[in-house]
Image 1 (cartoon, rainbow, N blue to C red):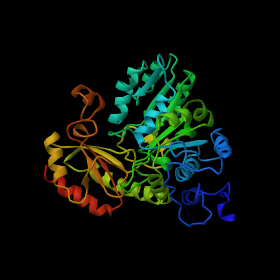
Image 2 (cartoon, rainbow, N blue to C red; image 1 turned 90 degrees about the vertical axis):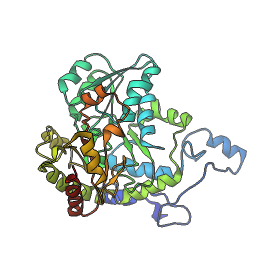
Image 3 (cartoon, helix red, strand yellow; image 1 turned 90 degrees about the horizontal axis):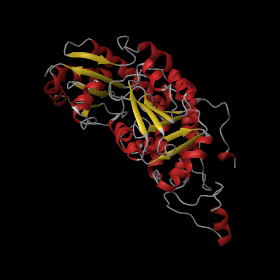
Image 4 (cartoon, one colour; image 1 turned 30 degrees about the vertical axis):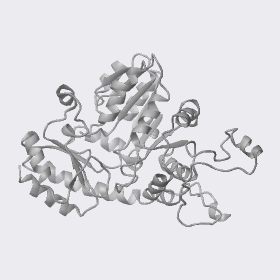
Length: 398
């Protein structure tokens, strides 16, 4: 029995990342088990009837809950410091569920303009079809937030740092404005990871992740997560997830559980490598501008120091020569791979204007600062000297 005792309440972060939420079967396995099952059996009809009372004491169907998924949820809940974590099949499923579960016809949603392409599509196109009034704001501008949040609001949605230009939003200030307007603040924290930024501690109500990124960290699995209060889960989220079915596969949940074991080690090294790479790019003659929250040249450097533990592993920069220059540069890379994913052990690069934000109009791209020469680099776990040499060699192709 002692093998399944909960962790001490004062267990530190690295210990929680390895042991948090572990639920061993009667076989007392060392590694977390994969409960690859869609359903569960009952000893009697009476037991089945009792299970469907939905009191949470019994697994009924893996669309609702699953032991492996529950281990991932509990481990991430512990490190985020949330009351509840609910896993989803992807990061976008988490974003949509966190918003759609609480919004209805006539409700007002205010969001930062600098969003990942699919998030922007949900805010600007999908939710308005269902009668939700949505408004976009420059997330960097607190006065703009104040003007938009004078009137009542149901929800506010933002990502910080943003995709792809790594713009920051003052979480504490926007949380206060949101609550004053009667709304709930939903934060996409994927670029910062649960280790570098704590939105709930800064006043946010809901945090969402694409676990596909740093939490998996090796390009193997899709997954998402929503972290919130007990009341938000009970009043909005639980029934939405139960009946719409964006369930995380138990196998993917197992991969994400194992990813959490090494998350702290990987993120620390990611940040060290990215800081070196960003400093190199910041002074390179064929880079018009480097954007990294850990650089003093970043326009929101002081805000980054205030609400982030480190700069993260994403670096955005504008290459000389516009789109042709950016393409020649990418095509000359040998170690860094062209991919629209991020947070991987491998260094990955993408050209937002033609990939993640391709479907935006020229005017929308200009408003978001998505320059034809802009590239987004996710710095991996290779030796940073090799990555820098690869970048230097490729920049020479411009």
